[in-house]
Image (tube, rainbow, N blue to C red; front, side, top):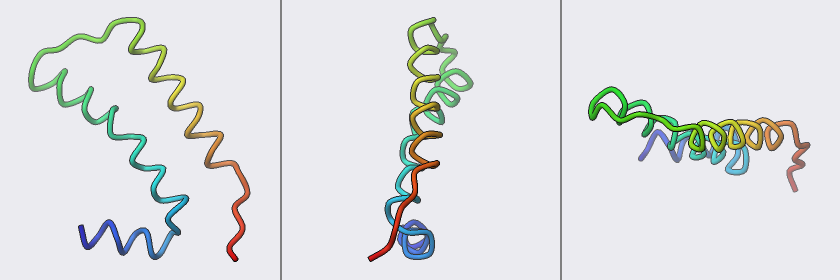
Length: 65
């Protein structure tokens, strides 16, 4: 947790916290690799939507007070 909080301090909580949105992708990858799960079309569609939203949120201008 120390590395996470240091990263929040360095990069700013708003920007760095967006990394948490990638957790479902790591979960998908590990479940496919370790458990032999398969991805259906709906999961892929929502994954693309999440990636698009992450991309758009990273493009937003954030000002520090």
